[in-house]
Length: 315
Image 1 (cartoon, one colour):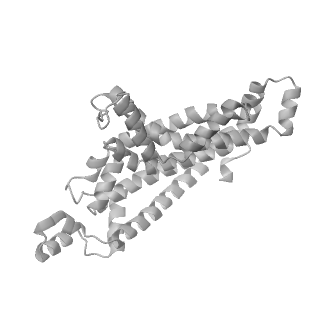
Image 2 (cartoon, helix red, strand yellow):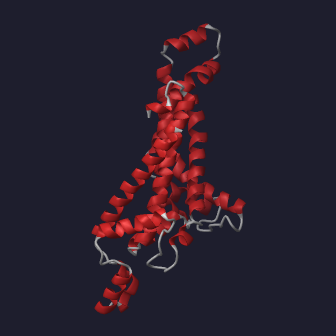
Image 3 (cartoon, helix red, strand yellow):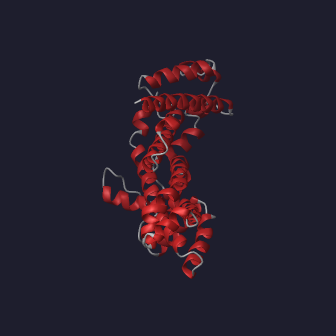
């Protein structure tokens, strides 16, 4: 209970600090929401009236704390551009981005763990060398370019899916998952290759440990030694990386959403930044920060479950 309370307090403080810096930085860059909203009708009188209505003439710190108090009351504000509640705009987009992040993470694990074990088990072999060469190539390709290649190969050439033919989860959940598989794969591949290399190196270093030789002397097979003894120790740094990779997936899926035409949080975020739509930007920042902090907490819990020597009080 003490650990949970400490984590909740830490998460709240972190979100407040992050949003404060983002709010101040966002207000320092050039651009005026009132001008973006009025466009060609932006006369000085109308600009001043609109700025007064939106409290844009107030000091930045005053506006921030007004926004923060409203947030704690459950009010995310009203979009400057669309004049509708921010919660109405973004809540139906959260499942889209969350699904893509979850699928990317699952694909990353499914690809990296078996390959990492296999390449460490047969290190130096022909297949190991081929896999590691491909690993290096894929690792150097950024997710957005992977997305372009996947769109070209699976969409244009093989015609397995329709590029830009996004299917809403509310209309066809199966079609939604099928379409989301391809952008998720584009995000997962570079991260999976890094996890393969990390797990392979971690397992190889474990082969020289005394407990491994003891396990072999007791008649254990190679698979028995790997899965029953080595993997528990070798997987710890990989879990740390996977947690960092998941936070990067959540925060960095914006460009991939653009490549595949996915109406997730990324598209709204880019549009809102261009329009200086502060309430929408801040709401999305809060959601992304919260997701990242929850992932970090889950990584701590998984750490403690895998290795009992690491207690919650140590964190």
